[in-house]
Length: 204
Length: 204
DNA sequence: ATGGCAGATGTCACACTCTGACATCTTGCT
DNA sequence: AGCAAGATGTCAGAGTGTGACATCTGCCAT
Image (cartoon, rainbow over all chains, first blue to last red; front, side):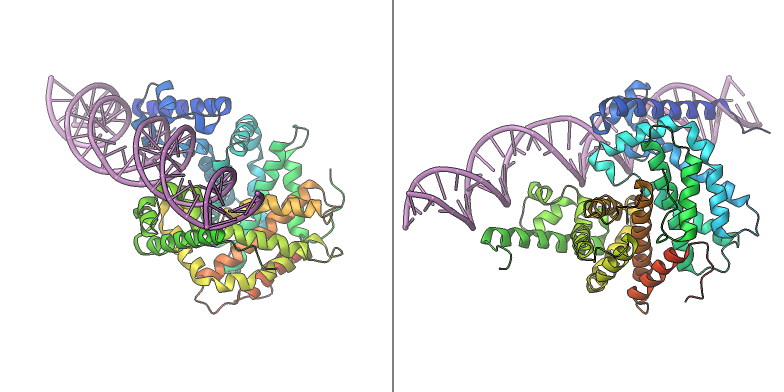
């Protein structure tokens, strides 16, 4: 029972993918704000109005894959043993995302360069993950896994974890490729576990 | 030797403050996107063009005080003993900001309600602080305080700290006022120190 | 004090993003 | 075939943000 695959839905997905691909390509080449929605739409033979039916804003097309990744994280989280601590469950779930990131390194890298070279975007980079926090918190709560954490501790835990993820991914993206994302993540979680004021046992 | 206080600068500051105040008042009353820049400008007897000379965007006026607070954090950080660890220095500096936050609780609270009730802003809430990270990292590096931390560890440390600050402030804002920001911050730093996977010793 | 300079503001014109309303075409179903 | 629903196009318009240029005003040297 694969996903219901009517012609309509396939067409839609195709248009969506085309928009993302074309947008990313042009952003990378000419810079985010030198590319207009009209141009993106035109390159896919679609009206600008239609573009906005797929994406709420021009920025959204940049982060199109991010939401999908959040979904996958939530799924991975749901699959963790109920007996593991929220922290461990998060670490395990995040680790499961590594191949996903690795696959899209080029996309992430080009987005990173787009974001850092566009002042208006610089702040909006990681806030996407901010949105993740709410979802993760909700999932941990409703699954009962966070039963003995206070709201405050839970928020701190989740925020700390997504922050670690963000920092690790950024470092991985920024590096020349010799670093392994798993290692970076492992190190980050290790430090969250041991306490941030603990002197690091050497690194890189 | 107080700050050089030419008439010109005073006037400018006055306009700026007026813009922020009027904007915040109207946002709170009518919602962020039902208030136009034109209206804000008009209420201060100023042209819309001038508004954009003070603030790069309509959103920026919402976070006008944030940058100032970042400045103060950097100063406080610079004043810390060179012998304290980066983590301790950050904790101490952040603690010095508490009165600052406390003073503006109402402003922060109304901003919080504006942000959470405006879909287009919901994600953009605290990521202003994201921008803080770069500044803090730079300061720690150039002051030599972070001499024996790897880039990665430093990034993680700073990101973790600002995250703790954000979470604590959010919790404080969301609460009914019975909580003390110092306590929340203290607790957050305590958990960063002890390790996020450590069971909490009771709380609220 | 005064005349010039630099910074602050206003005016105008314009590009671009994003939205609502309505018409049209296409797909899925019977 | 033919209808209903969904997808797209067209059109008009509000709102944000920017460049260019003119004007006004506080500042300072003479």
